[in-house]
Length: 556
Image 1 (cartoon, helix red, strand yellow):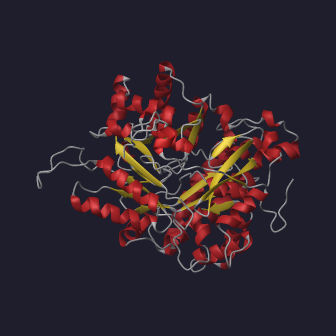
Image 2 (cartoon, helix red, strand yellow):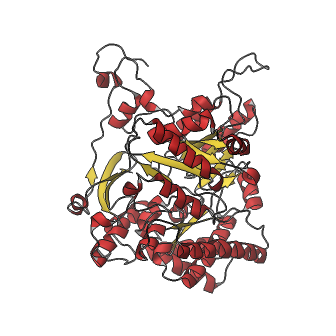
């Protein structure tokens, strides 16, 4: 098994390469140096030396890893430690329309992603009394924001992360549902669709291509479903689109949480307040052997994130005000599936997992309150949110968030230097340990690909974990490529609607539904032969007339 010469904490050369490419810099050139620098930056003024040392230790052993923005800005002059910002249309006015653009640009320029709820804006075609014109509607504003994100390359290499939502009863929701249905968007003067062009060239500018979208479902929708058993045409169309193209997702906001429809780009942090902010870090359950140690990690991770609310720089004044009022902590989990596999469990919420999750819930709540009181600051209004942990999951060499192992082996594509697409073959670190150290047959390891045929189990798992999380869970359920089947759509819609009140959100990914799919499952032996190599992808940029092959004049 590969072992780093610099630091044995990395489980693979791939993980160490990611660290060097994305996070290592002067003053933080090794993992140990970065952890020490970061804790000094964030906690140095607020905790004792013993507590600071304990926080450094749980980070150096990768039992807890803060969000990627924390790692990136450790030791740098600027301290934009927060991952994402939650924004909203506040009123249906020209002034708010312009102010939203200002907030978006300021947030994206810090390296953070954004989520925006556009539901306050009037429908397309509505009469504007003051000018005698008509409104262009919220979807056009979403496109404008998407364009801003496309042109703001964060940190020189990182694509902007955006999210947009619209209420299920907004007059424009039917158009919103098909806003990213590129399969049915023909390219003029060709026999191709936007989806074809996106497959041929991932950088092709398709509508809303860097924005994730979701529909907001409210208490009125839920009560109508419970009363009549009818989930309505919007929900059914939402399901059909999601299991065919991957979007829109579903944002569930009921009863006392009805106004918490603002989300960050990955949807795990929830709020009802415009200009709220994420503050993320994840506990790596795969590196923790006993529940007493887990208790300690939860304690010190919570303290770290609370200190983060005092030092992180923010893009404009209102974000400081909202953070001081809400002080949201996004304490998450990762390595959950590896934790299960090490104990011989299937992908299900077992009694032992529930005991650990109970510690996660109650200890984080108690520590957040007592530490805030000791610091004489406002108590956090929410403490737990489970992020997808893509890159930091790779660093830790474990399963991301609450996701099952995606695949025993896969090809991962990524952008290098903001210009070139490259890819590496990867054997999942968890699978690798089971295969090499325990002699497990690669074909016997249950993965997301295997579970793709059993969406009920994936939904059940998310529902079980959500009981212990006071905000949301970012989890994407892998599905097989879509096949026209009315009964399957209805069965899926019924099961999701029945569980909607126990979820905060839901997303799925049908295989091959988007161009530039970052992870593609490959046979174990194929990846084994190519480990450690970096390949450059020859992505061609085509003229749409050339692709169409018809000669003629292109529509512009």
